[in-house]
Length: 570
Image (tube, rainbow, N blue to C red):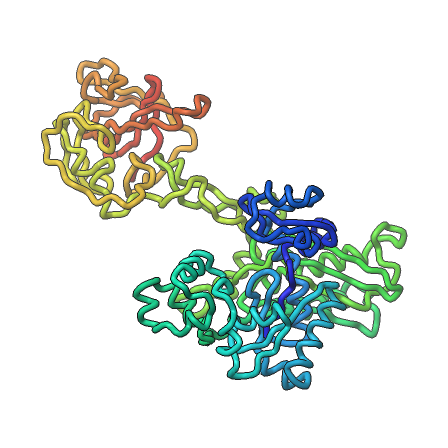
């Protein structure tokens, strides 16, 4: 059983935008007519006409742009009206919906009686004209709805036989069949199915099944949204905070259990109250995370405390006790299950920690409790973002936090960065074998002459942040880089040219006012040339990893001639 609303794009434009559908109206898509009103059809306008030709036939034409979202929104009340009488509605498209005919026919006294009842209910509820067709299959029922027919069981092939091939809704196939002399669905259905598939393809084979009345696809029925709102009525009006708090906890647990039963959680909570005098109160609470049962109860208790406490003349105070409470969840999200702990399910410990941290935030502010989120970026500082507790954990920059282990051959400290510079033992290096890089070598970019073997790495399909530092990450990332000076063996400052040429090999480094320390191993330089298209944010630097004689390992960057210590390795 298929319900069809004629000229639905035009009707939807009237419902949403107030366009008078009784006049000449057309809906255009890609400069062609996709729907028109009855008055426009009387003036000779048909689907498929170009805009200029349609306006030439009817100068007073009202033109509306095609909007599938508008059509869908306007059709929702019609579907809801059908669901008032029958269950299991499939929305075929905006303007047409289908249901299995057996249930309504048994309940409402026959197929024709059910069709009349649905049409009448839709007209009274939504003020929309509609027609119903009944046949074996959605395709045939849609064609029967055009004339309001009820095809008896088993009579669908005979009903389809005389219809033209244009009824398939495939203009290219219909044009080809007409040029081959096949003009009706009966002629098309008489062809062997194997020959149709071999000659015209899969889509034509599907159309051949529809033309023969073999539409056995089950309905993809729409599941009505679950009723998640909870409410409670009280014989004795609630006018004390303690009594209201007791009632609030029970109502909050009911709401949480109902959401959990559907695998859902909410981020906003609407609190509605009705007093004994008929006064209606409403507030909406928002939470950055998912509201638990305790969080729902707390917010309901706080709101009731705010309503019931205070002076009698305070604005917003109820004029009498509360006789009805209603909780409306909003911001519905899918609840992701928690992984059980090592000794059982995660429970009170996690909940106590969350409540304690939320309490600290309430006392000291949201920014007082933060957690780290790893993301994309080239430097360790860029890859870490501190997020307030309870906020959505999104990285500052997209991308994975570091190269995978299989892709470390092209990053800093890898075998491909081996040059003629000084090498030092692997057991002294953070995270593996470092080697000094000869001036001119540029791993990850255009490399110069290399004296060592060059490996071939397997890059991911979309390499994230080329030139980033590989794992392991530094133990300490300095919030403010420390100034440093690097000297060669003769005591002269070491510089890096625009071509990444070192003036000499680094020999000693002094951080701040500390005495110089001998460098026993180094690797680099690795260039950083970021956001050159935005002068205010552009950065051009070169990074080095230094191993010192006292066992420390540093990450340095030289930018505009100044050496800076960015991070420290263990």
